[in-house]
Length: 507
Image (cartoon, rainbow, N blue to C red):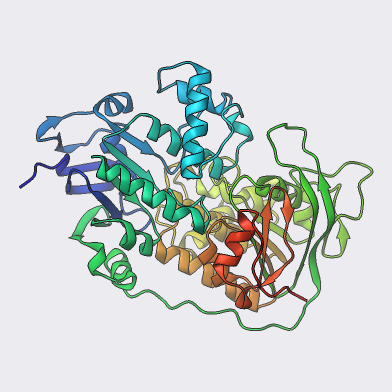
């Protein structure tokens, strides 16, 4: 038999009382694309950190081409030929894109920038090499990570949710690239919650549940439903389609909104118009970096319109263009940002204190002081109702897996019972079971009369959730399309700026 490129035997890792990995056995063959499947908290991220040298195992051994290997750092892993794109990125925000590349790649800035541009054109991963990281959206940062890994010429490439920033037309192009890399001798560890992608791309899959390996399969021999059941140990709930609703009152309205940001790397918005009524879900599609972050900041109140700009943003019938975030929340607005670590939660604070960030109006304060028992009870309710896998309300937000922290933040905002809920990337990095639960909860709230705005780069998600879809491209928003009368390919054409199809416009 061929010697595995990478082999793990009996690998275990614990953090205090939490056993993240338990006796993991894994073989990654040369020239293979190997999927790692599991729910949030199953131990996938910890296992990848062990392989990349970020963490060291408490027990067990790793070998590389049949020889024992101990990785003390990511730098050592890169020297071996292992590259990784993290779910939470390892980039310095005060540096430019190309300066981040220089940290791990030798070469002059101009040469590296040109190589980046070439890779970006080839793989539909364009990003300005001279832009500062802090000015980029989450999706653009993921593109930087992918390009940075490709530039190191890896023998093993670890990809965590690499397609979340791509339109449908680009996913297969990326897959062709990964297949070419495999054929040239690169092995790939591929983490994705999109099971059809795994069935299309991967030739092997290892399934984790609660930190343990529960199976090794060829994903091409199983349908998505069977793979999901192996992951979560039970049958998946069936999606509940939105029920038709009578036209409700306007909860959000943007009228010909123009915005020219001060940041030269940000995306200007031009004549953006939308209307969202009670009992509707409006989805905003688009490739990351086309103005989503700027639009979200204007709607949430993080960015305000100028003093003389009026009658452009309305919530609950009120002109809110000059209102801050807190004032908009007092009107009945709630917001889940795409950046859960840093904007949605404070990593070093407990879940109890993170609950207070937006839920303090729910009588969690008494005479200006925190009512600790009520604050803790609120966090416990959120953990229970939204199946957040954590030791308890005193756990730091940064200790949770990305998907579990997302469930907590979404739950916190829904528990405010807002009239208008704005969710950016609601299920980014969330496993299939949790994603289905979040989507079902949003549909239920919509059917109860809540107005919900969703920005997502997951077209499947928008088609499952939305009554109407609008597409953001280069800061311009398309007319609203009736979801049930529109095909994904038509949305994809809007996303890349080509001639739209015949999707039925909303009246």
